[in-house]
Length: 144
Image (cartoon, rainbow, N blue to C red; front, side, top):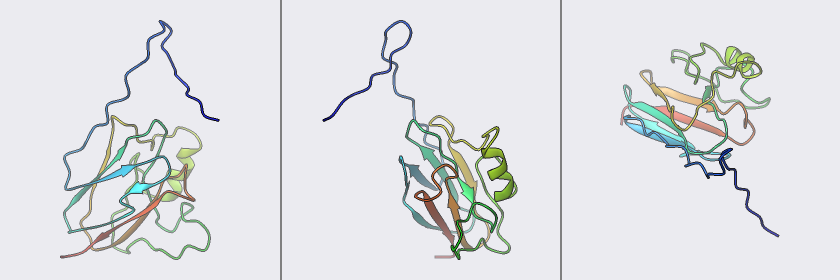
């Protein structure tokens, strides 16, 4: 059994799909329904990464700094000297998690990619707060 759902405007028209904005960055990570593509990425210090949401559902990029965003039993650690990053401009995973339950200013929409420039070497784990069990990625920063 299969079906199709068509959502129309009040005037009966089918709206155009959202325009997915591609940021001018050194690297792009695409967001699917339940995954980042690529899931892991290696960049040089000073490289920028842009996360692009091509779906119609909310996603976030939330660095796992040892706070609540890291699932229990996960041993990945945020680099000690690394600059924290999260869509919404939060300064910790704890602050991002608190906001997610209320204002959700960390949502990434198709027309608003999130960009971060990595300066310090290390491996930076991150998650989508809404899909934390499936949607996880890493950015490794090192000289190549």
